[in-house]
Image (cartoon, rainbow, N blue to C red; front, side, top):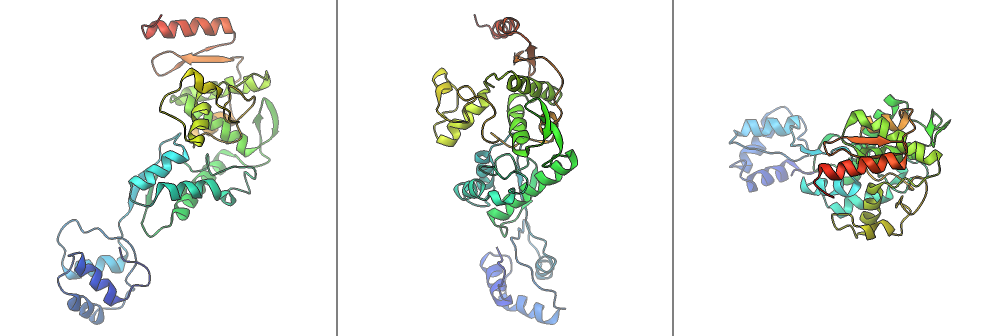
Length: 304
């Protein structure tokens, strides 16, 4: 790692220490006799033996090493923090602190946001170790802004919120999208799943979204990797079994298709859905119909 402000002497010493060059003096002499492009800070990876001119040329070009971090759709800020740490880019705890406190990054579009959850857009990123964790979070938020702009998601844009055409509350749309993202991995179903939750809001029904309970326990540090009946009673505004309406904020970071679904749900009367055991869902308008779908799902799993 060559840090900003290093002198040519310090760079030569670091390269020698890492076994990249054999002679500090030769490197410094090369710098004197060559044209003077500034040697650029950053992390460099030399996977095979290189000559001194090749080493010098790479540093002069700034051909630095990038760490690839892939953030799948639906990842929470907890997942992202671990991915950042696993890539060797910093502490998961430090990234979480940024995600939970740096809400000024989105205050213009989501002034009531409790954290950056929902706005760290899923994508594959290339980061360097010279970037701060705050800069990495800013890049993810910028990517969200770009996609939101393309979708027309901005404060004051007409959209469906709770079943009525109103000015968009961006945080509500992103919160709905995060629930939809967690509930189905099938892009073609997302607008229909969104319709179920919007219909429940219209009918003043509890959303009863299992992923919201998981998120409530993640925030409390009590999630054990599986949901049990007792978990449905967790006392958190993110628990949509206990508290009506949408949770206070997103429960993950939705991708483009989930955001589209939250902005443009299907027009249906569905109030229920359950897995069909094959990666999709069966939808129902009545509780009786839903119970039959649940029974079919249990039979498919070999359960009574």
